[in-house]
Image (cartoon, rainbow, N blue to C red):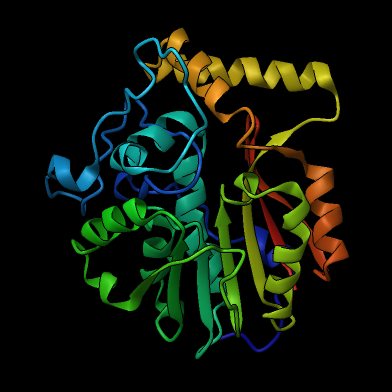
Length: 294
């Protein structure tokens, strides 16, 4: 239980935990698993069936006459754990630390929301924190297919009984008494002109000392450095087993769907809607996570 808002340095001094393999698997961006890490989404020491860990992401492995726009449909939902772990560097760390950060802000009797929860890994990380046991845990996603996968996956764990999944548009989801809101790789898929309104509603649902975890793909103001990080990200994906064809086709499909912004743009918007302080607490290549304190 917290008596007062924690200082920023207290947040940064939290025990740094890398997420265990079973937590590596949700969010909103094409991801996949490291070759040196078994993407096992079950509890440690227990084998995970293919149906409960998802398949391998080969959705863009063959030439497509028209890749179309990227959608979180049944095909993406079925391979999402593999996709996000192999596509987003540092994803496992963000998911694991989401629970640690949640424990710093959880108010008994409050709600913890995960907007764009996909398979529910971030909420599972939160549910395992003793400090969060007296909070309502609510996962929201607009993809029925993703929520179906989340229900099946979470059912493996006793903590699932504390997690409520809702099929809804995050832009229209009522928010109230939120000690923590999680948006891991979700805002980047929302139209830019609607982002400030959503963040304002999130802030209005909070009390001083509550927090938002906002993880996003970032762009850099320096265009040459930005291209440099993009090239490094493509190299990262090649090391995870993606071909140049897969990288190119997925990039084309995401081009008009995922709109990344700079760290400076995010910080300015968060300050504008009323957060008292915010900044990046973790970044790997062009993927970063911010903490914003109400």
